[in-house]
Image (cartoon, rainbow, N blue to C red; front, side, top):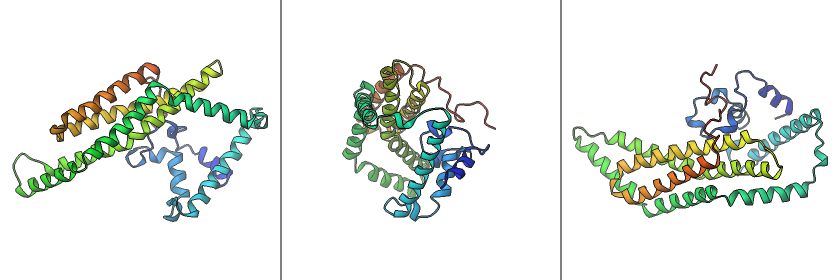
Length: 265
């Protein structure tokens, strides 16, 4: 990957600028992969099993090439904007970033999001036999061919709920750390520091929370005997949702490129 190829991709009109900045990274479920430069770049550069394997040198060589080309473009853009990157003190910048990250992780909503991560792990660890037993139950129903039952559809629903829960489990925390970091930098700089980025990241987290709530609600319908434990998770998620909504009141109004626009051409 060279910077000229990267520039050419960035200028391709079929791609929606910035659509990849505020997505949930779930490419397999995204209807806009054909409009995403990051997806095209990934498909083009990581086009072999070796290049997709993080234990293979080919993967790291590809990744290094992309980073190098991106760095060259950043330097060019900085020069055009009159920004002297050499004037930045690396040690001072690293110290500030470390402080920002620590403060971000200490926010009530990021702590709550991390607690949710652990709560999910604990729930699955405590219910290791639950899904195996359910699978046997659904299989028996399928063989019995009992009217007004749809064990195959129930199995697909359960799989979908589990995939959603696991996909957003850690991402909510990561996105909230990023959103919090943006707000904290703004306070340290005595002004707004990329408020759009903070709100955009918070919105992705909110969407993840909402979809997780729906998925847990779906699991409750399939496993009514788990009502108490699932309700505990739902209460924690709804409390987290209120915290995030209060901390980022403008997040809901943030328009994510492509996803929240009324018409995509």
